[in-house]
Length: 227
Image (cartoon, rainbow, N blue to C red; front, side, top):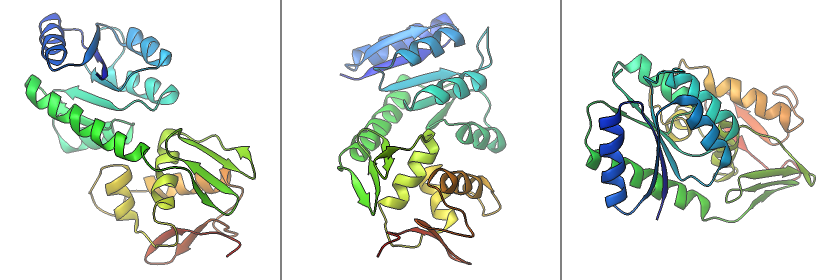
């Protein structure tokens, strides 16, 4: 049984989704306001959050940012905004998936199952050790020289993606597609910004790299600095 939180202000939609997902075997909580959703997400023990953007108290995009700042719980955004720029913005702000209204309970259930399969498979491997760097994909923790490294959700996802391909060069397009789920063009600076912050947190720079090495014109790779 998976724990699902629905944050949706329209009673009929909230009630229909709650009934459908509960009938599918999930444990479902439903709230009508954004701040209630944030407070509940902080408490933890959720598997997926379904978040409406058109909330009465706080815009759902701000709720998304607030939840993402304190939790790595997968978030599916429910939105009537279906243009590509808006969808890209939603994904950049930390959503794992989105559904465009109107949608059926069956479609939402399928997306929830896909996310649960993905997060389950991501949690299976044990810690990855690269030199003095240890990435625990199950607990989503990172230590360097036995000292905890504080990473945001996307910084961890980026590092874990590189660690899963240690020594292999991956392009920024691959990173966008796999980490941000954005198979869009190569002009996006999101990867560069996150790599820069990640390097700083690992005690290095692009000019003096240790773990993260740039292969100019190709991409980046994660390596053991002592090998």
